[in-house]
Amino acid sequence: MHDLSFMKNTLLEPAERPGNINPNARWLSGEGAGSWFEIISHTNKLFEITRFNPEGIPECASFFECLSDEVFYPEKPYSIVHLSHCKEVNVIQENKRFVFIREEKIL
Image (cartoon, rainbow, N blue to C red):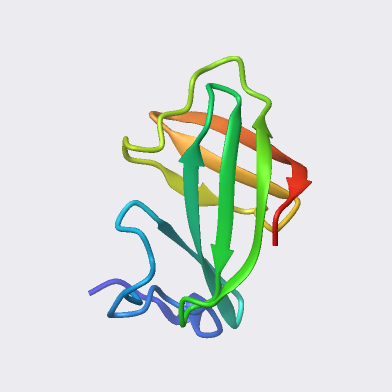
């Protein structure tokens, strides 16, 4: 068994995903908190990203521009990484970092 004592204040992924959270959404653990992130592609550079609290309540939703020259595919495996919030979201996919910057707030 792994020593997880360093994560004592980190909110791990809930055992059950709320019913309104898309199966493609990803969990990001944080200190005393955590969030679900859902990414929907509109074009190769424009994405709709919604952040939900652990219970599935939307906290923010915006259109984001992907700053990477690479193409991000939300249907392929990826991980949300720190620092991610309602203005900037960082993602790792196939060992590449994608940075999304908020363009227009929806919620």
